[in-house]
Length: 502
Image 1 (cartoon, rainbow, N blue to C red):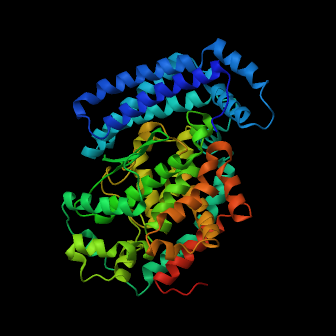
Image 2: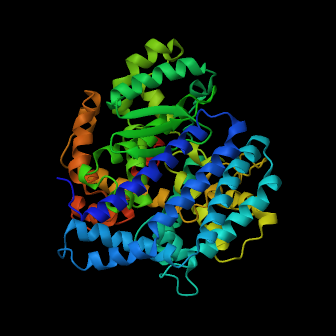
Image 3: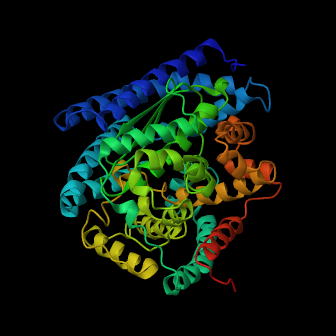
């Protein structure tokens, strides 16, 4: 049932939704099918749209009217929660000038454009001034938040991406990661079992990969009337409406697995949006979902589904039919290849076990950036040093090092930690699901709807009306515990590499 608001507030939401739709459509077009030459112009027009939306959203008379309206709403109602979330978001922009907002938007658009060029040319020096300018503007803007107390700027960023998270909580979370996972990673490197994944690194024409991707999409039961798949440099998902999800992927000729797992990952985001309570469309109850909450669903599909043996048993016949090159690779061998653990440079290609260390590296650098302690001249070296420290590998180029991710060029300071936290949420949710569903059998039989329906009923429909920490406790019967995550990884990889746990 649609939420009931006063006409003035519903019109306010509708106008903002129209601006959001226009910007989201332009953004998706910009990084998928638009010619590069047109990007500066479309970026400028998107900045204009953002400025106009900012004026509408923060109109002083309207904001005062919303504050008065909030006082009239029934205590505990979803309508009250929506308006409260809206006022909390407005509290930041109310303290900032439109000139600051416009400058930040312009810096963000310029930085993302320059990042694409810099990554293509592996040229951090060309990107550095845009990154530094954007981060400085982002930090200055976030200091307008009522939650900023003078010395907690990174907490403000972290809370913006996942409600109620802060540096202290993330430090405790990553401490568990640092204590529990590196010893196992080191044992695997010294183990006698070697997994040859050369079959996944052979060159396959992109046209063939695209055809097989249709098979995977069909298996996942992706609704083509509600979800489209495009290609881009760095895969993303854009939520245009409850019935319009745009997911993207990237095909590499010699990384067959990459596009598959990135598509499954992005569909996890889209599925969340598709299965949120439709009554929340256009409200903060929809838009206010935390990033770790979202990443929990994309990482759930990517890892617990897309890397599972049952998933590949179901899709193996189609794989061999379309790629006879895999005829001599058994399902067990294929699954071993897919789950191979090897410290590498690229986060999006990382195995489950080493992945959280990629995030730890970015988290440690972000703390320096947020606190004004970053020397941008030496950022590539700092990045390389941390990779050598935690993973024993060192990038040789900027493209495989500090330029590999798009996030900082969007000003997304505080987003990276949500990937690891989301993965941990996913592990605890998966443990709860397994108590109610024979996941392996369901996947073997291709009954993906059993899993998606469970997620809808137990996770997705809440959207932003509950935090993911609250949802995890509801489905599992106990508070969030990162040991679900590390124990899942330790159990999986100890068995895969035949290592005796201490």
